[in-house]
Length: 370
Image (tube, rainbow, N blue to C red; front, side, top):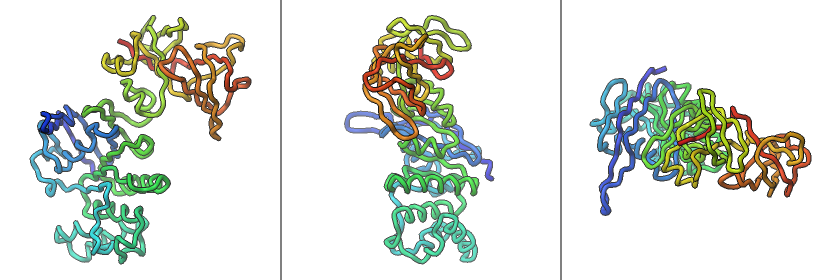
């Protein structure tokens, strides 16, 4: 395994437009090392692809530094960075065979024919292209063409493996298969990978860590479970999966959490505290000093008349049976919008139109407070 380190500090990109300067990426700091599979995730226009293009040398840097193993890449052309890149478009040469396309980078580097054979053929075999080395791109499916582009990117043993929305043109089933193949090959070769996607499930399933971008800023970095369970902003909480927001006042707070009072006066314990950004508070319509965030699978439902039923009141508008879970949509005055509850074990006596109590355990609740 290559123990390599990518170190980014203060990375900024400003585009000059007819309407004035536009900041696409602002003050990004990031460290990626070893054989880590790191994904940049965010909505369109958030700066993730621009960041990847600056790492690759395809986009100039306005300010900041990019270093790899202590070597400053910022001023180096892309051809001198020893990178393997895979794009959304396969960019294969139509007049070349599968083998010739995969070997293209090695031939440019004047590698001998025997070495090319020893490097490329095992890579094609590992990517499920055994027996297809003599075919042309027009004879291949979309998934096979993308495998060839991956083989080409990895054939010359790059220091970094960069992927920009590589599966966007594939159907859903093939995307799942290909993302697993990409991670498997990347781990086998021990190469550092930086992956750009807007698909949350894709990023969560293949990444060692995720960086979530918004409006050019890197909002949060962490392993998928940490980012999902402990978001540090309302945006991350809302962007990753589904979330319920309950405006509140924080009555007490300590190192272990606190006690929040919802709009109806119901008090609930919360296990985790984060700072509430004033701009996000306005954007998400939070008119209280705090807001409690809880995932749908961590909410509990009970009939409103059940003895000692805790929580806030609501009415079930819709109950959807989805096989492994039942998803409830609950009208609740204590929430910013309709509450979503997901459970594999639907409570007895709770149907559409039922009055219910909605509750949660403090360990699953994050309170964002001013």
